[in-house]
Image (cartoon, rainbow, N blue to C red; front, side, top):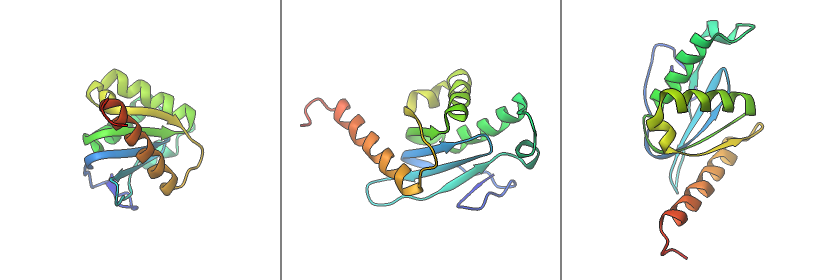
Length: 139
């Protein structure tokens, strides 16, 4: 289900690291783990059956969103972005069923068609802002 650039439904891996940005929609999620020097892209795709449904089925959204949550279980700080509708649905799911992930989310940002570089820049700005808030001695 997760791989660099090429989703493979038979493969399930997870991302580990200090921080990542997610771009969530109802069919595919881009996961961009990053640090100050580098970043990469991985994807989690909904099943083919899910992607071709005319109306979303709560069970298939549940399976898809669960795969996304599993993929970032090893990430310490997560910024979640995406179109407003998908972002709201994913947020409701995470807050209800994955409270440990919800506690690691530093923001829920609605975005429209950002590039990977724009997502990473947003993630880095958010991470720096959170570090400044966490350390009252920083200027």
